[in-house]
Image (cartoon, rainbow, N blue to C red):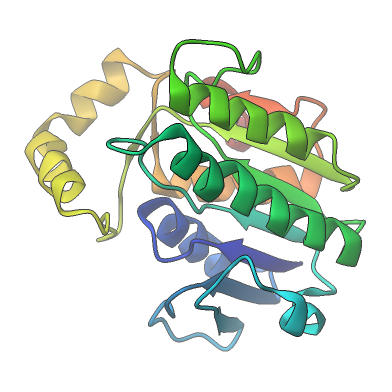
Length: 222
């Protein structure tokens, strides 16, 4: 498989990139983001773009891919709905429209979040915007599109969030991770599990398109 990853320097994206590079059936991984990953691999290419809304001049480098794992995202804290919509709905759908035109046989996987509001009418701003984004992606002419809605994600293999407050939060919780996995198995995943599940979705094209934590884990465990 040839795979595109948007947001490979974020916490989730780092985990997804690691699993892709380890997978024997992945021959090429191309990341797209504002900074390079800093990793070295014979099957890794970094495409650095200052403005991810502007991809027209690099369309030739975005063609011929089997899957896109879209891991870009921002926290809604302190943002207006208009600003959050631009960086969530507008950016994601702009990229997806380009990719669906260039790669109609592509599988597109979007990292959404637990609690996303598919009705687009709930009280939580971020959930409405995420729901609107999911619904738009599901209507696009990809071979298949999957919405991943993980809850809490434990970073493994030295992966860290780029956000300082999140790093502190994860460091405080680290001694409790094993307890959280046992007590809340349907709410907790690892970065490794998320990456492996994305690969399984791209390989197998399961029928269910909106996947909660339990569904994501079931992709790996069968």
